[in-house]
Length: 523
Image (tube, rainbow, N blue to C red; front, side, top):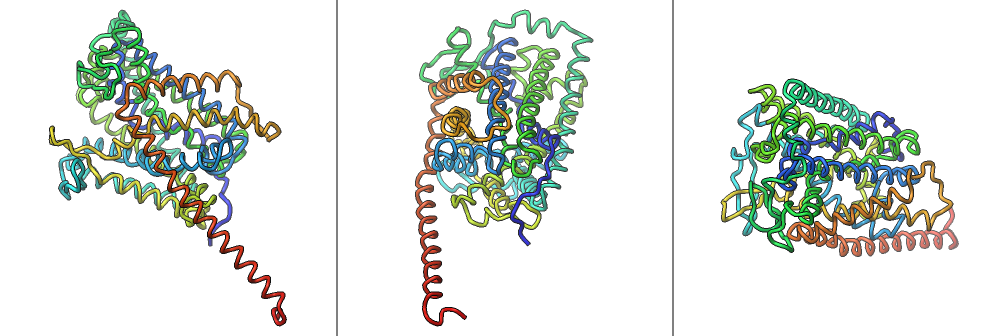
């Protein structure tokens, strides 16, 4: 029998584990290589991560007021709907469910599968069960053993969460604690290496602000990195203006590695004492992860020179670090850690995203069944629909005819919507100001610390990064707006269907009332 209300199963610890678990995936072990090629020096690498940390934590503190004020399932969808309009809320929900959440689930599941190939060589991108089939120029579908394992992981996490939030949180807590322990062990290796030989860190910071071997923004490049779509060919971090641009562009990787911290707000309806626990979970979870991320980058710089970070094979910086301290076991150790980390992230993304579908369905803006809770008190159909789309995103491939190589469609889509997601973050924090004006008497169990300066600084900083991305990453930013606005005709259609259904219900109710008024209408 279906339930009508969520079960309050999530305490403060569970909520913090969701925030931390969803943030820590595989990015922290990889993206520092790309950032180091963009900024070119140890000091600027740390500055890039400090910017990410400042934006993330200030955003989380700002969201805390909205979460405590509206502790219901749906998170950002609800905040944007209440602060601006149902249309703005829907555009976010549309982008979330078509690309952001489902694309992230697909991407992280593929990351799990690829690193599992270190333990099981049969799992390989080039080992096909169904060889690539060209469906149109530049696109194909395939099923490799890597894709197959990713499908299994997506299905498994969906089933775990369908049987109840109790099981979802149990899995989340176990895997988040395990990945945090893994991060601490990695930091321990860095501390050991530093105590044994402090010269590497000293050498990296001897020229902390002198950029070397940097990628060109738009034009030619040094190394393997390329930044596409520049307005000004040839700019690099070797100049002051170029460094500002490079720091902003580097946020694409670092912000994505620290993203989805707000997903705890999607499950607000299942958090005990949400007015207290949601702001605390957002603040504690993001702060803990950002501190670990900064320490991880110090760990990298304490073990290997900056040029080794820039040229790490496959960008696997953490693997190079472990191999340097413990030769021969780096790939295996990091493969296991990343498998644990990515499985926990897929579980957290799955758990949270289904609640956004549920909130939209309750407003008549998604499939009706998605707005129904199963007997375990979770939106089972919403989880199934999210799972199905995530599975589909794993199969399509992009094809580069000049290099004759295959990519993943979801990777392109995620590149496109990174800037679009940042727009929604800015709007949500702006909604804090708007709701203070339009609903001054609303209950606010928690008021944003540092208001209005802290949320104002977030909006200013994030907007500056956004402008730079639109100027210097045009190939991957403007298409994101097209994806967002593709939801507009869907919204119009759904609203018309909703109005028609309400009219039919009202007509039926009026007909029943007239029947009761006629002679013989009463039994």
